[in-house]
Image (cartoon, rainbow, N blue to C red; front, side):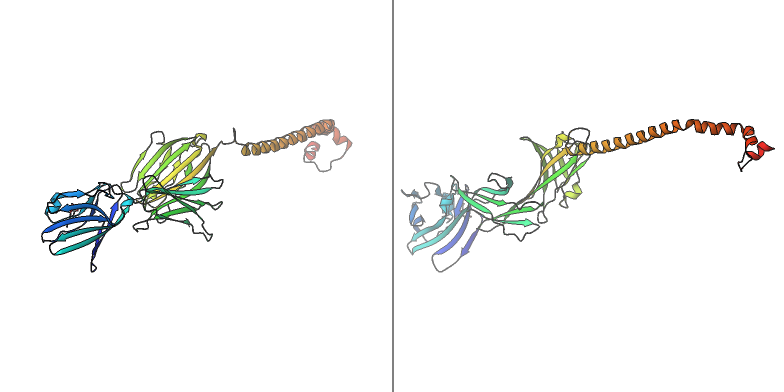
Length: 391
Ligand SMILES: *[C@@H]1O[C@H](CO)[C@@H](O)[C@H](O)[C@H]1NC(C)=O
């Protein structure tokens, strides 16, 4: 029972009661102080229980609650004729009447019962089942079915046209699924909000997809930021690769406590202070190709959650594999090779040419080595050695 509200109108008296599915529901009724002759409980017009003056409750043959309703003998002796209904179900909703017969006359008290199965969790995931990329938001085991709305962050002027389906489960509760086609590129946050028509706080689940590329051997930061409205209590990171998934770490904002899986400790790092500011980015140290895969970062509070999914690709440094980088380096190598070859060819050519003109330079050297001889033949024309040779 959530709340009881007395709205005293002329007659009969009318109370509103809200009950939870599966729980005990108490429908209030008070007995007058005058001697009781008879007490009856009805649902709409069907009799549920009949209590004679001997205080011996008699279940009605066509009891609409099929024996789930009782009266407490202890309560009755205190003048409390509340009906106790076990294992409440959505079909128990409706108007009930407590009729008290005394010598002074009949007195009716009406109770309007609401039954609800509140939202316990709301989930989002990416779906490609329809051939389009969609964000799917779902909630199960709820009653009444909530209203689901969508928004994006940053906001868009585009008309969001989600497809929402309500399905009645065997239990009489609902499963609601809403799909929204994503708007192409851009790392947009899709926010799904579910609100019960009975009021109360709404739930939200948001989603963002990112592609991240890294190079083997370097550190890599995996970005993850919660939307502004979410006041997260926990952050958790998981990694999945070819159908197997592993927990990386969980950080509790209030206690500042982090628990990380042994195989990831020393390889992944988180700044707890930044998590409180909505930045849950994870730093991977000394990455290798085995870090390629899908990472999930989930911020959560009581009624809100934000999921970021990162498709991470870690490629080699260029010495092996990876199709783009090696071809580029190969081209550079080829150009350098050609340049070196050209230089060598030029040097060799010059060398050969130099070799051919060698006798001439030898002759010159010879004349320099024997200046006396030359002095006879030609008078000086200003060489620095000439004066000394003359003197
Ligand atoms: C009557 O009994 C019900 C069930 O035990 C209890 O919840 C309720 O508070 C009682 N009402 C009063 C007025 O004592």
